[in-house]
Image 1: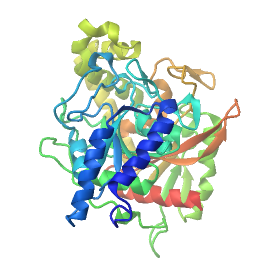
Image 2: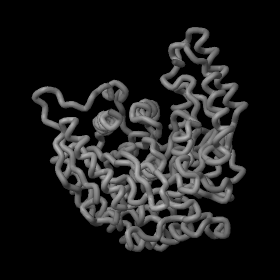
Image 3: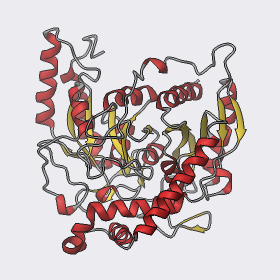
Amino acid sequence: MLHAGALSAREVLEAHLARIERLNPSINAIVTLEPDRARAAAAAADEVFARGAPVGPLHGLPIAHKDLALTAGVRTTFGSPIFAGHVPDEDELFVERIRGAGTVMLGKTNTPEFGAGSHTFNPVFGVTRNPWAGDRSAGGSSGGAAAALAAGLVPIADGSDLGGSLRNPAAFCGVVGMRPSPGRVPTWPSDDVEDDLSVDGPMARTVADVALLLSVMAGPDPRVPISTGFPDVVLPLQTDGAAPAGATPVRVALAPAADGRMPIDPRIAEVVAGHAATFERLGWRVESASPDISGARDAFFTLRARGFAAAYGGLLATERARMKATVVWNIEQGLALTPDDVERARQAMTDVRRRAAAFFERFDVLAMPTTQVLPFPVEQEFPTEIGGVPMPTYLDWMESCWCITVTGHPAISVPAGWVVDDDGIRLPVGIQLVGRRAGDVALLALAHAFERAVAE
């Protein structure tokens, strides 16, 4: 409608600002709001359109960026009181690309301190609440983005993902979040341009919108050696998921309980298992299987800790009192590592990736739960047990996501259904679809087909 001139950028912006005014106070998804800046950008977008000049693929769409992403002239706190007044003088590369594609930035979305943990709260802005149940977590660390999408405060949003921060909140809030292949969305500026565990990526309410946003965020950059090219990802989504006549059917590995390798709420497993019928209705071939991810925990915990020490170790001596305990723990874990520890973790990751590559020679997609638990009370920092199994750290309960991070494969969380919890609250469940390494386009097409089949 924006590209056809049926709506102006100013009309779209005002509609979203009105919704933010009405709903955001109870959700706390958007934590820095820039209405004057947004109105000026929307007016400029309308003027460009009125002149008949070319407009970008995201022309006139309001967006709020995650508060970990640098935004020139707009406060970026990283959810930390240490940086409560921090205003960058440059945009993150993907922010620059999104802005150049015609978006209207209206503010920033909430994140846990330094993006640590999959529950969005911090001492600067407080907690973000799940729009479907205000006393429950919206997930994290892109929890503000997911909640804003679910509540209709923005149509598209960005996030980042190390241990599940795009996928977990998407599942908790009933939206779509994609962890692209490493290098697909280059991170710049960066202290480690070879890092392939942490990625930036898109979130939206539909797979097609995720694909549209990714097509703008993705693409090579000469400063980031692992960055890769990316084709047009919009047109491949015009599919019903059926294979062409004579083609090999899509091969699905279905693992609703992850083969028992991690505790998963049985209600979530039941929803995922029920989609065997959805895949079969699409003509896909379904088999019960999951990859061997033994060694993923050591690899992830070690390399994550190493990254935290590198990024925040310098702050620990002077700012320990202003850091939450889990961040301090993660930094100290990293500072205690030896070169041999890091080498063992890298070897473990290599072994996981080798086994994953062999697994995906047999399958096109792995379908498994995005999360191991339903959205939990906002007062709880993280689940300390699942089905009677203790979760000793703030990371253990997210294994269903971080085990996939270690493989290096792209993954997307798509809404899969609803369950009623023990308190009678209806909550969304996400299914995690994992594609072949570097197979982002194929994964998006399969996710789109699944999404359409579920809606039928």
